[in-house]
Image 1 (cartoon, one colour):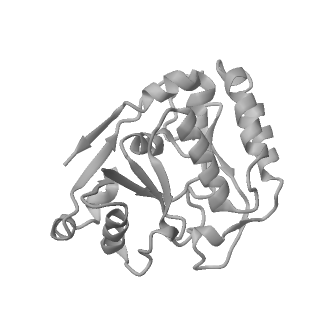
Image 2: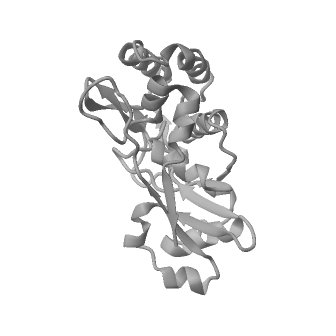
Length: 232
């Protein structure tokens, strides 16, 4: 059983879902400390060949976990829908994606950042055919541990013999010996960002998965998630 762990980011990039595609269980770090100007409440979208931030306005106190962060107003889903429609209305797959997207946005628990992010991640994963089970870290009883110890505790809480699937940058700060001593196998996911037609000459990587969806549709975007590799 493969376990991946990540903050509940806002409509994340392709690499986030590619990591989820490799996992059996995907743990959302909803109780991690909120970091200002992170991908938890914002993501980049394409504006004429350049990335532009699409941001959920939030209110919080320093040190708050993500699941205590609240939206500064409840109108942001409508504003974001209007922005996405204005920027992507001419994209090839817009008409296929837009009704689905607008309906999901209208049903979001708009004042709760973690819950709204989780809702969007869950429905996108389901529509893309991903099978990973979503779990909230706050429900797994591993909040007393820190750093590698917490990751190990979360993985072990998911089941006996679970394997931890880390992101590309994890090998810069994780201690493989600690995972080995705890009996948790550690593997890494290296996502190679695919290049697709964005309607202009310079490709902008790292945008929200909506960029690919509006341009390529569901099936072709799901195919992009196969552009991944796993190494021990």
